[in-house]
Image (cartoon, rainbow, N blue to C red):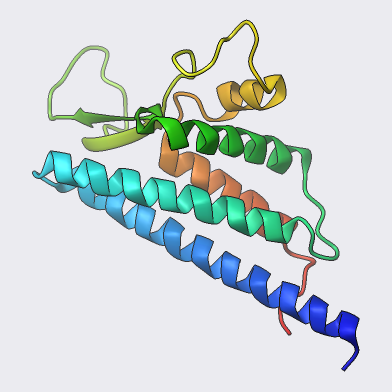
Length: 177
């Protein structure tokens, strides 16, 4: 077999594995967050949710690094912007896990009532003001993408969006050996 074909097959196989890792990490994260909605063990559930969110983020970044060099892969501007935001989130989470905020919504009513009412534990991306000098961010592009695409958004929803974007970008790539 030609040397270049071996290298391509090896890269395709690695990309397949990273896609499987991301899919598995995403599923585990969603399951953990869903369980935390009804869990009474708030602190241990929060720690487990943070762990699965970190794992999903690392798996996403590893998968994208492999995928973006695949033949025929065309990344949309939106995908690139989301990945910039996720890279910044990853950089900040290495130093302080409090970037992910959690809040428990209990069965209480206030006016005006907003529907649908989602009771339970919710996880959101926090603000970066405590982590970055807003007047002179180290990487202004990633900082703006984070503020626009992730900040104060529900973690599960943002991963859902990037998963869909990557699936759409991936339609023309044959990852089968």
